[in-house]
Length: 245
Ligand SMILES: Nc1ncnc2c1ncn2[C@@H]1O[C@H](COP(=O)(O)OP(=O)(O)OP(=O)(O)O)[C@@H](O)[C@H]1O
Ligand SMILES: [Mg+2]
Image (tube, rainbow, N blue to C red; front, side, top):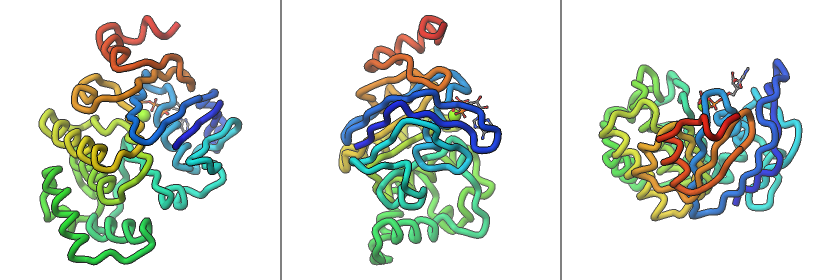
């Protein structure tokens, strides 16, 4: 589904090179965890895949179902079924979570979904995520706690039904129970829809709930090691010292 070859990117303004040749292939029905020290370029990879204007691609390629992803605008990438759950979700005052979900769902599916059916689905997923119904009438993320924002990201994921899901530190800011709740919803969605998932995380803990098929370690803009779950366990025990020179 996603094939990234030798992808290089830098910041648009300062021309600071961040991604220095990323190779990664992700199929539907696969979960790939990406780990790596602070500043290694994980979020930049996520945002570059989504077409964030702060980053420009200077080399390599990224294909989504054979299409050149890098030539497609961010909104079209979303319409194709690519979803990014942000490390720091933005606050959007004046747009309620409920109307944001409805508008983005209608845009994504290019049709007007039956409002009764739609809100029933939203209600069910919100309940799974322990999001209070009143939250749907609040401005998107405005004044929300870190954990509430992360839960709202997963609500969007479940409603938009993307094919490629990129979750940037979805576990940060979640309390122990919320981590389980969010992991359960991600697992439910994965089982029912078999998307491709890229899960950026610092900690083994979320991987106890969501089993990745592959684990990659990123350092200084490159994937320096790939393996299975055992790699994450080794990292948790030893830290990065044995992997990074
Ligand atoms: N827009 C930007 N302008 C300037 N520097 C940037 C920008 N975006 C990223 N960087 C720099 O690029 C490097 C990689 O940043 P990135 O956010 O991708 O790291 P990360 O691996 O996600 O780290 P963390 O684990 O802390 O989230 C960092 O040194 C960061 O300061
Ligand atoms: Mg990051």
